[in-house]
Length: 265
Ligand code: ASP
Image (cartoon, rainbow, N blue to C red; front, side):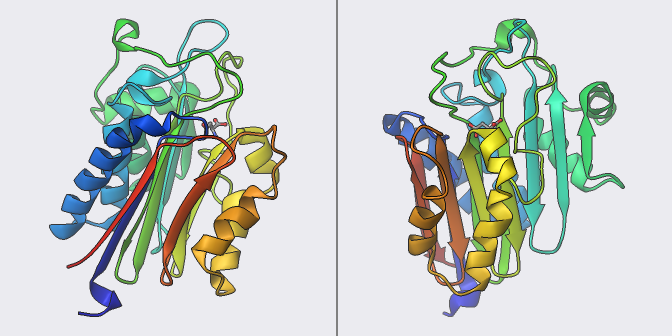
């Protein structure tokens, strides 16, 4: 067995999520790991974990999405892998699994679809709809964000995925870091990064790409996590999960439900 056989999955339930909900991130991680074991592409394994968390209801994504100031729910989601595949949706309304729509965008000629066009695209592609009464919605605590994410490794291949209902009570149309390449997430030949927290702050620091550059410089993920958390004020919710060829790590300046598993295949 060599590192070429190594499978790693990390899942998070967002900066500020209750660490007691780690059973949810663990189940999502198991689904993803099983998918890797059957040889599914890393990006599909990452999206499966995120879809499982969207369906959980305890996190700010999918059926658990926070409401906007007008009572609507708009979701952002994205996915990326080390072969250069990327897709995202922004301000998507009325669909159960925004990450599924992001994955389909990644297979199209486009990279990011937003608003009305994203809704039409998701409908045309047969994505499962979500009626307002199916949304359980989570929390109204402005200091937490609770979105969901996943990073995976299968040998030399890496991928990541994210999904969020955004910041609670933000105005409709607000889009954070999640659908922005290099901000909320990044995957390349050396590893993958997924972040969570205050999307405006994360985007302005181009956080995921800069964290990935630390991987390229040979830094251990266990050192990258506290380094990147240190880029943010303590009052700014932030969390991150990282996997590379050296190892993996996760952490947050809030409580955060997150889990990791690895195995040789
Ligand atoms: N980063 C997300 C956003 O700002 C929220 C989160 O990660 O919890 O939309």
